[in-house]
Amino acid sequence: MKKILTYVAIFIVIIIIIFIFLLKNKKLDIVQNIPKSEPEAIDMCYQYSKKTSSGFVDHAWLKMSILGDNVTGEYQNLPAEKDIKVGKFAGTVGPMNPKISGHIADVWWNSSAEGMNTKEQLNIEFGEGSAVALFGEMIDRGDGVYVYKDVTKLTPGFQMSQTDCEALNDKIIVEKYIRDHVKTIVPEKPVLGGSWYITSVDINPSLKTGTMTYEDGHIQGSKSFSYIINNNEVQINLINNVLKEPIACTMDAKQCPDGSYVGRSGPNCEFVCPKS
Image 1 (cartoon, rainbow, N blue to C red):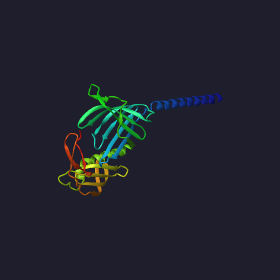
Image 2: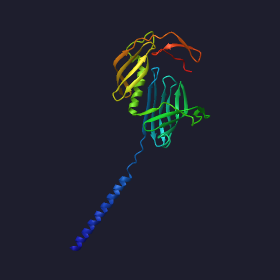
Image 3: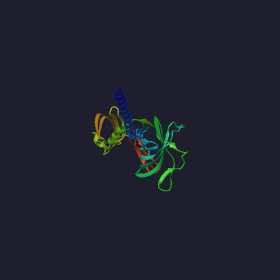
Image 4: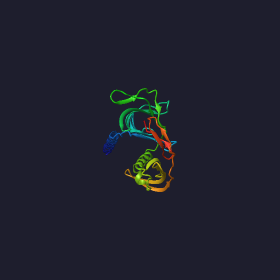
């Protein structure tokens, strides 16, 4: 009887050992077969906005999506009274540079300016808090692509501050809509056959509100508004209207560098020469 009990105990122990062994192997197989997650891209956004002495607003904004050493994005340089240059880019990001406490992205920018499309080199210094694009004299490397003539002689553009990417998207979408639809948004009619155009837009994404100023060359107005974005469709709701009295500019003229003459115009009665 004792032998039988001994055999039964040995059999039970063997069964337990086999069960534990199979259970460990099953857990190991589950761990080994867990799919490895792909690294996620890091999105970073920056913006600059400042009113000029003439009442217009300089803008610039930058979107970057960084995955490892690679970066893609879009940069728009929008000075109020100089040539605008915009476009998407792709390139690489260098290691941390202690001199600037940040990184340098060396990218190929498919830029568009004054109706001309160009592929050109662009360096962007960026880090936590700010980013700046670097400009310099460009030369054709021989295949229609432009590169810096001397990377040691680069000039910084607008100093952009880091911002929430969703908030930046709101600003971009709403401002574009307002500029494209100002004629239908403004209920008043322009005077003397003029046409409304936007001089500035200021948007508060956290409150979904904003203000805009506009003019037709003779009178200037401003409006506060709230907005709703649904599937990139924008709805503007006006809050109040302020319309300024017509501006009476003196009738003197100024000769521009190209030899032409211009009179005073705009809300500040300034001489505005044609762009060279």
